[in-house]
Length: 367
Image 1 (cartoon, one colour):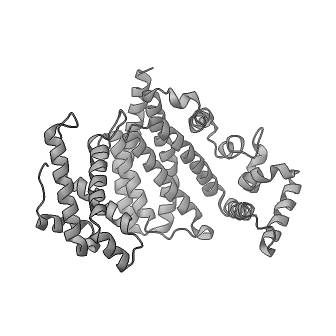
Image 2 (tube, rainbow, N blue to C red; image 1 turned 90 degrees about the horizontal axis):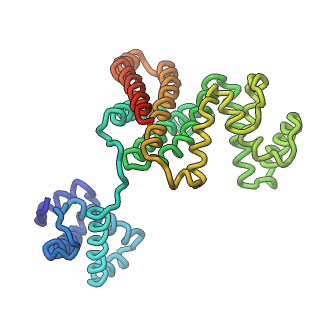
Image 3 (spheres, rainbow, N blue to C red; image 1 turned 180 degrees about the vertical axis):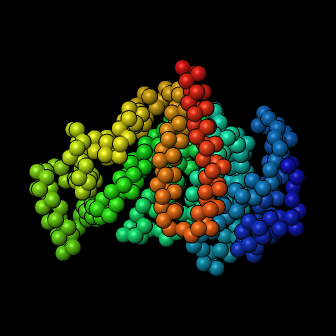
């Protein structure tokens, strides 16, 4: 793609990418042209000890980003002064060239064990993308009515983030992100299983958290919230030092089954995770916590081990999240939508189950 665009070609690209910038097309084309020529000179002279194909689209994307950011908030007078300043124009050429060469030609990339086209990645991402599109059709961000939907949506988003990290070669970071996904899925399972009683308690403690973080003890609403919080803590024989953990985990007391949990505590591992029936993930959760807190495990990690740990735990979390999603989907959508979803599920869910089993075997072969 070592070809320089004409003004007409450049204008067509700008029309597609950002038509709001068409009034600056002459300025932008001039910067693009000088930048392209400068990169060609560097490439031809072998100053960089390598030769490379020049991608005009990449140059234009950097240029557009640089121009929008540099002129943000300008009034007409400031904008006119900026456009007339030749030194600023030259500086923009240099910056765009530097970013293109550094980030597109010499961009550091981690060793990758997978790609977005590999079935264990592309198949689960396809399913997550479908779930995300369906969730986006529903009302969101109204905690009193859409808490489970919002948590599902965030779980899908976190899952896709893990996939991106794996594709970019960041396996330990992916497992650290799975830690957040695991926390979300456990809360999701409890809210879905125990219904309104758990949801209302969760929302109440969410409000306690807002009041606590904002230190709203002085207004009437804040005083009432703190009075109620202290009353509930007293009922459970908790002290002032327990305030933060009660705010975060005290909603679990609304679930009567907590009384049946051996060594129940107001924390994630001995509270939420046990109540959700997923305490078997406690060890890998602790491993992900070690990574998150920058222990030597983060620095001297085995890429293959953490790749499979991230991938397999992602799949297992996905299966549980998908069950909650399916249950919710069937309670909210019409027959035609249900039929389409069932057809898709029949085709792809079994494939994901098979992939999961196959990847378990691949993981074991390396040990």
